[in-house]
Length: 255
Length: 288
Image (tube, rainbow over all chains, first blue to last red; front, side, top):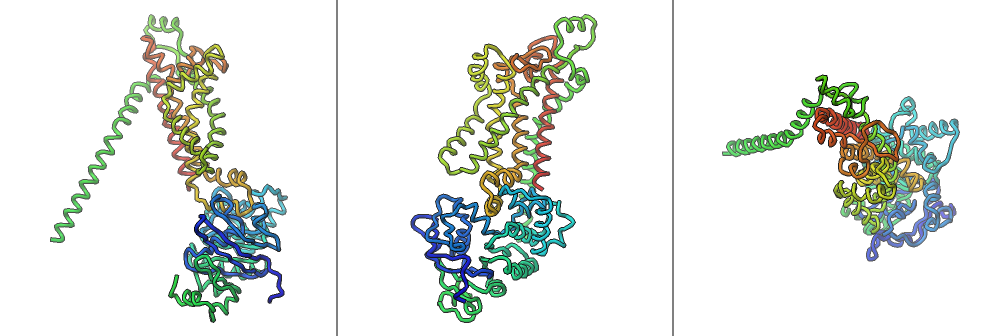
């Protein structure tokens, strides 16, 4: 396993909201290509903060500092242009956020619109069909592509958001608790979908749900108070946690 | 014992409900009284010629009085003037107001933006007569004459804070996830604003524009200093021009023309009413 070149690598990554406190402390970890890595931990442990550092979301807020290195294909993200990074690193948010004024069709293509990239009609149709098919939404919406994205159910909206991110052909897909606002059936759909998607894209997912982490991920991180406590194969981490804090969390004594 | 308590509470609840309903009705009374008064006095003056003919000349008025027929003429000059000045003001106020609102919403913590925001509030509270006299000094004096341009500048200044504020407020209440989702797809800030945030806020911004129009359409004082008035239909923007509220004032001062006051008032009132209802309807429709 050591020989596989990582696609994403955290090197002493720190994120701080104020000068005194660090939300993420010296996290170092290498993420392998075409895997699903789950980031777990109690509320406020910095897992979302770490995730949002990868696509430079913190740049929007001038008070937040990100230090250390985050390497995407051996290139330090922190010194790249946010626009370039975000094209290669897609993100799905906790609450489905399809653009309310755009149709389903336009939502899938919104990445291109927002980047000012023009596509021919054929390319557009192909992209829309391919992306909606890869999130298993095509059969449900192919007759209503002109309706607004917000007309769909919560689970469908979230799949639309995944399709929208996939349309840009990202290397890495960040998911910030993507199923926490969804019902169990929609959640199951999305989990199934992620299994298929890992052939195309490397997924980094923040989740509150330990069961979900166990079901879908091959690698897991456990974070506590901003530190990366444990990182390893999901099976090992769940069956034989090395750190006391991980054990406490997994057995429900903490968090 | 318990039953008595519950009955007591229910009675209190009912009493409060009735008080609230009564007070709400009381506040609506002046509104309906005004609407009723203007409608009853004005509606028999409304006719086709009222909208197509300008203010009658003194000669026509004398003739009509001699013959015992109703006062002829209408408010066409005022309607044209109002539309012309409003149109010019809106064309400049919309882009400038929206851009300024975008700036304020996007840089809420910026010191300069906070100052601008405060000044916008101040401008909104400035008495319209002061805006009129200042525009007179700035525009009428250097141009050596009253004009539609001067009038529209006064209206523009009055509309600006309303459009800025409504744009800013609407953008601020959009969920931040929308902006983040746009940026996460690799869009730059300008594109995300143009393609995602402004379309999502369109309902609120448009409502703000309509309310700004209905707010200034009845302004009289600033136009007295700037547009002055004109008794015939005119389309040139560098000459004095009439406006509906100016006409109401003129009719009031002319003993022979007082019959026309109520028709003009009714027109203005209906126009504002329709604008407001449209704004409400669009805002509702957009939010669905």
